[in-house]
Image (cartoon, rainbow, N blue to C red):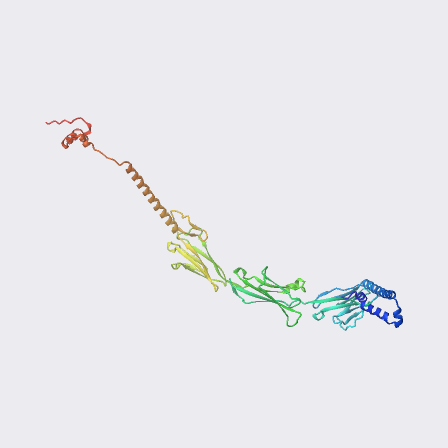
Length: 451
């Protein structure tokens, strides 16, 4: 912007001054030129320099005193732009406004240009303010505020037109997706200036885009088309959540318009069932004669179908099978594992209930009990009890054998009868017999009497 060109031109005219001095020195008649002394020549040059510098300084002071200013304008397409040319300390110099093609829009308060979109807002000695309605892209460019001083001053205002994008669109490569699979969403926002930015939301959670691309709009070289992609691996928790493509642009500031610049698509996630079997009745232990009711709950998409079966055996004929299993008049033959199986197009799953029917008047209450489904495990308890009793008996027998063995070991020795007492000292067998017969019980010698 040339605000001080008037001062720059005289100050930079040294070549013209030199030429002027040359002409003054050699334009005189030959004899007179030769007779001028060197001192006179220098004095003349100094006088010319002083005159030129003084005039340039005066013009610079005048230019400084009349500053011309304006501001750049940023406007949304279709709205109104206002250009203001302001002058400080104007001395009634003429102000005019020119378009980027250097055509005069307003000369003082007169509009030579035949464009009714330009209207005079204010005109005074210090300001020329003009409005431009229904702004379009063709109105972009540098507008010139011009002040007729010597030389003229100029200031430039650049009009930038913002174009909001069209309503975005969102597409997906799959309408229905199974749990664990990936789905790709594509959001497009066209016809914006500058290029719009796109944000992704899953529910209320902001997501990071996978890829983004910006291209010039083939319909208008100043506009841009923006494309963004989001790739998600989904789970059953994502079913029904909205995927939102939200477009941000400096031309959009009010909340209602911001809501219009977004697109949504809801996730449709299918997943295999989750199954749980619970016992509704009876409470506590299941005994002979009771009625058993098992409830099967399955959650899946699509809605799963349910079937009941008894592992390794057939379900009793009297059982009533719906989503629940009802078995009346329980008896020992009903013992077993009952399974509820749920299946849909995605997959299948199941849950089991182990039934044990107790006698009506049990001698002992079993301690093992499955709190989740009311499933008793008496078979395991019986085996444990029997094994414990056998172990105790075996241990007792072993202890008894050990005690008896130690007892006999301590009382082992030689045992003598009194019949042979005194025979040890006999010299021969006959004497031993005689001594034995005569020395029994350490008593006196027996006497025999014959009658």
